[in-house]
Length: 179
Image (tube, rainbow, N blue to C red; front, side, top):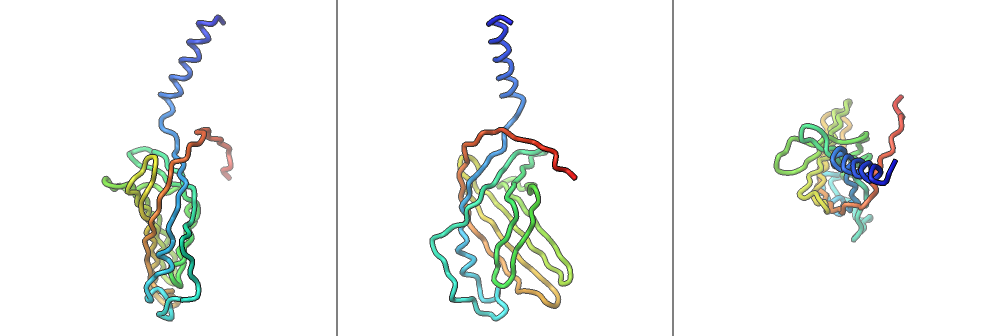
């Protein structure tokens, strides 16, 4: 192969790689302000009184999220498992691999909800992005509701998050772990 052929082969490979692959997943380092969980209303507690002996200030929860474009104008958000205390209740959702965006035209929104029976409980986490680009900013709304005997008090909270797009190598390693 001569030099001219090598240059054309490299150029074609680079052009094909840039045009054919589409946008790679975006990795964000996210800070979640959990302070509202320390200031929940008395109705979130069985006793009707919030605890006064456990407070932390000026600390955020840090996480890494992955967002990528799907089909039909949908996006996918990978956050890992969700676990937040809401007074005496706990919003714990094994999110699985990814959450699919909702059909909200104004903002990028992801909703995951788990329902359980005996008693009838609903646990919900709603991620709403006000901005999504080099930075990410929005709210994580948490909700716990229960009807029946043996319920923890119903409660909800809204947590603010901010994040920065990480400059990462877009290489994806794929292995077959399907069972």
